[in-house]
Each structure stands twice: as structure tokens, then as C-alpha cells.
Length: 255
Image 1 (cartoon, one colour):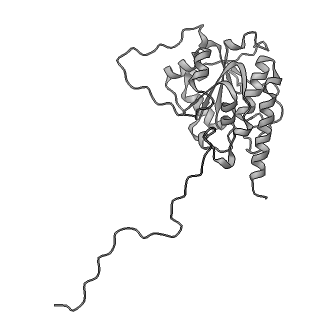
Image 2 (cartoon, rainbow, N blue to C red; image 1 turned 90 degrees about the vertical axis):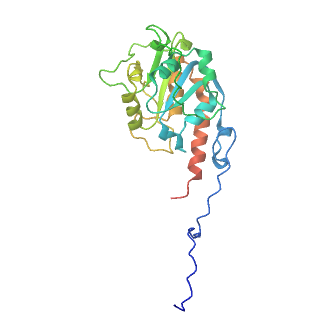
Image 3 (cartoon, rainbow, N blue to C red; image 1 turned 180 degrees about the vertical axis):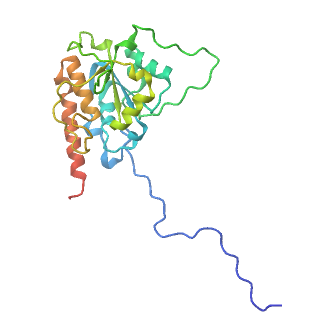
């Protein structure tokens, strides 16, 4: 019989490591959903205009703190935001053909951006896609035009009936938006329109991947101003965007 005392049982729980305490979540603004230190609310400029806007945001862009879409969504009406990479074709068709009143109510500016979930199976007949000649044919995709793309080169500016159109924007990097186009044939079928000779970008907090690249907010305001012939309507929002960019630059540590 051994005189060696038994070893105490080892605790199977992991030892606490200094610095492993969970970080407390940063307090967020209830209105813009941003951290209080980078709240957007003082830069919001309510901008009511006639042409419905649909922004399709790549999921990876939701976590981008330097993205301009949230400020656009909080300011511009009507502006609907949907998040995804590959959308259900019937859902996308409904968004593109949605009447103006439904477009404004589908995603109010005060609501956080949400990711649409697939519709649950139902015994009811699925909604049909819009008929040719319906509002679907009046949707306009703001995107660089390449040879062979469906274009609207003869689009008269300003539009005689802005409320009869819908401006569609893709929010993401060039690589992400090209992937969104590839995965959504309905987007490929939309007529495309590019900004005519846009001014230099104001978006100094994020490096552009192409010389013609603009932030989503800039692109939307410049396009809406051209399509409606009313640049003054969007000047306050663009000026606020300048202020937000300057504030973000000031927050950076000195080089």
C-alpha cells in the first residue's frame, strides 16, 4: 500500500485568462442604430422627392462602418432597402413593380436595415411576375454600361413623369455588385443608365476601386437630380454628407 497521498482532482474548467472578460457592447443610437460615438442623426436631412428608389445591399456591406447607405436611407423618401446577394425572383419582381405608396411604406427610413427571409411555403398560389409593359419595365438600374447591356441611351432628361419610374442601385464593392448581377437574371434584364459626367467624388474616407465610382449616397443624389432636373433639392443632403465625411476624417488618428 503506497503512502503517497492521492492527487487532488483537477478542475476541468478552463482557467480565466487576464483580458478574456467579454467586452461590453458599445451603446448605440436608437434612431440610426450606429454607435453613439459615430451617430448619424445630426447629418440626416429629410429629402422628399418623387422618384422611388430601391437599393439592393450586399450582406457584407452591412458591417461597413464607412458605408453611406444608412445616411441615405434615413434622409431620402421614398427609399426602400433590401439586403441579400441572390434574391428570390418573385420577391425581386414585386419590389421592382411595387406601387409608389407601397414602396414608401415597405422600409421606412427610421427602421433598421433588415435581411429579407425566404417566404414560407404556402398552399396559396404564388404571386405572378409583373406583365410586360407594367411598372417592371419602368425600373432603371444605375450601373456602368458595357457593350451588349440593355441601355437607355435615349432617355430624355429630365423625366416627364419621375413618379412612373424606379431607380435601382446596388450597394457594395464592384466585385460584390457584379456577383449580384450574375446571380439575379432579373437585374440583368433591367435597362441600365450611367451618371452623365459626374463631378469628382466627395467620398474621401474610402478608396475608390474605379475612377467612376461614387458612394451610394452620392450616386443616388446625382442620379435623382439629373432624372428630375432638380439639383437644389439634393444639395442639403450632399452638404450634410460632406460634413459627415469631414467628421469621420477628424476621428482618425494622426498619421
